[in-house]
Each structure stands twice: as structure tokens, then as C-alpha cells.
Image (cartoon, rainbow, N blue to C red; front, top):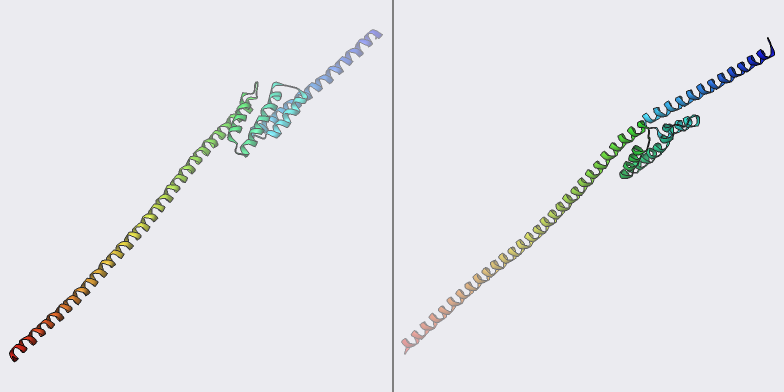
Length: 212
């Protein structure tokens, strides 16, 4: 074999080795990229945003794609929305979920999760409004009930005052009647005494005439 043939063989072998090496690297990177993406998607399915973010970042180190680039932005909104829910800040949470939904080129799986959570927040918000209305109505009812009780108490006290005044008037009438009866008896007794005195005087006068 000539030197030229040997050189060509060596070059061919080197090319094959390099191609094989590159193929191995490409296969390994592709496998790592797919594995990290699948793990990220699994985490999204159970709404484990921190884990999903970690695996999306790992996949991005291998290969930058629209999914792992926009996923990071969406996950930030989702994490902030969850924090708002813990504080019962429904309006903020609802707005953050909407921003995750509206992210340009956003991951469909993350949009779906945001829509699901947004419906939950809307329901909680409506429930809070209903509970506030019920509380307000209950407070109004309690106030009216208290006012009715106070009015009944005032009426009871007024009735008691009226009854006391009536009893006092009845007692005064009874006392006046008793005094009148007593005065009539005394007048009758005085009249009887006066009539007796007059009769006695008359008898005495008639006796003196007879003696003369």
C-alpha cells in the first residue's frame, strides 16, 4: 500500500471517529434534553412549579427552545399567583394567571394549568363576595333585632309607667271616696246631734210654758 493510500485511509478513519464522536454527543445531548423536558412537563402536571422550572433550565443548558425559554416566564407568573392565593389576594392572583395565559409563545400545558387555577380563583372570589353579602345582611338583621328588642323594652317600661300612674290614680280615687264617706258620716252624725239638740231645746221650751 502506497503512502498516499495510507494517508487517505488514516484521514478516512479520523473522519469516521470524529463523526462517531459527534453523533454520540448529539445523541447524548438530545437524550438529556428530552429527559429534562419530560421531567419538567411531569412537574407541571402536578403544579410543582419549582421542580418544573429546574428541569426547564437544565434542558435549556443543552438546547435553547421556545418551550424552555417561555416556560421560565410563565412559571414566574404561576409562582407569584400561588403566593397571592395564600394571602387571599384573589384579584392579583387572577391577573397573574392571565399574564401566564397571554405569554407570547407560551407553553400550552402551562396555559392550561393557569386557566384551571384562574377558574378556581374566580370561584373563590365569588364565594368571598357572597360571604361578605351574607355577613352584611346578618349584621343588618342583628341590628334590626336589637332595635326591636330595645323598642319592646321601652314599650314595656312605658306600660309599667302607665300602669303605675293608673294604680296611683285609682288609689287617689279610692282615698278620696273613703274621705268623702268619712265626711258624710261625720256630717250625718253632726246633723243628728244638731237635730237632737234642737228637739231637746224645743222640749225644754214647751215645758217652761206649761209651768207658767
